[in-house]
Amino acid sequence: MSKDGKKSAKAPPIVRPLILFGVAVSMVTGMALGIVVYSFWPNDLRQPRLGGVVGESIRVIKANYVEAVSEDQLVDDAVRGMLGGLDRHSRYLDPADFESLQADMDGAFGGIGVKLVLREGRCRIVAVIEDSPAAAAGLLPGDQITAIEGDALDGESLPTVVRRLRGPVGSEVGLLLRRDGADLPVHLVRAEIKTPTIDARWLAPGYPHVRILRFNKNTGDEFREAVRRLAEEEPVVGLILDLQGNSGGMLAAAVEVAGALLDGGLVARTEGRSPRRQEEHMAPAGDLINGGPVAVLIDRNSASAAEIVAGALKDHGRAAVLGERSYGKGTVQSVVILPKARGLKLTTAYYFTPSGTAIHENGIDPDIPAVGDPEAVLAQALAWLKDSQPLLAGG
Image 1 (cartoon, rainbow, N blue to C red):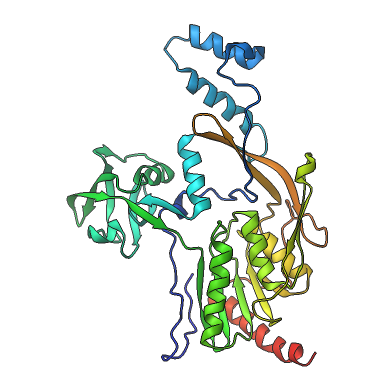
Image 2 (cartoon, one colour):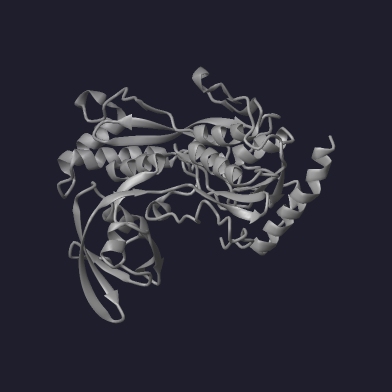
């Protein structure tokens, strides 16, 4: 999102705008909200003793289908079908999906450092990260990737292309680019690509705009560090916390971000069938901006972890929420580790705001409706902050 409102020349923004490279285009909307990883394999489908409909079907298909089919493929398809019959956030993770989800949670992966779009069936580069293998090799926005390792990309989906560009740090990948009608072969060595989640800058003196792009395991630390650096430059009078377009992420990260602006108290409560899913997530004592006003921006694509933060700050009266009603994803997904680098992303609980509001299928309603031009929404949030400050200062 374009952001204006620059600080004076003697105090430039301390955190430059950040772009999600590679990983952003491969993330699934409504990513796992609460990540709980554990091993669980009660009945190995690969063992003949399984019996029952699934086991017998696998045995019959493997022995009689007109073409040879591996047991691994049959098991993958069987489990994928079972998950497909549940809610839309539960899914089976094959090795590639499992690795991609892990990279999203870690905030880093082995890759070349590009952001891609798929337009009219063509995969094009729209941004190149500085100091990345792609930058070193001279890749440019507008370049079309037509082949990877000699395989043409005709008809390939964007997640598939991203998955093929990723790989172990230090491994090589060969691309064929098309630029100005000419084909250019390029060989790159993958490096660690970090995907920051915070974009912070001064919107006006004393009023920073902090946008959270998604929630991974680094987001809480990145948020606190960004606000602290801003406060070292000059006092933070009020804060705009921008969660527009944020599809979610890790529950723990949402609790950390909300907790950084709350002086203790409940952030969210989860409820599931298992007793261990009945949890209350609390904020620690302390407030990064010492009670200064906060405006939270949300839109119809703000989901899961973003809704936890907005709901907690709203319920505690810590912030005004501006924008439009959020997406309404109020379920927690747990990642279950299975053999052979596979896993399940399984819905295991619902979450509720501190006041007990169920967000699932309902969303968070804004205190102040605001839609339209992004800069106009920012201006409305800034005006609210400035109007609120004298009231807060006067008690």
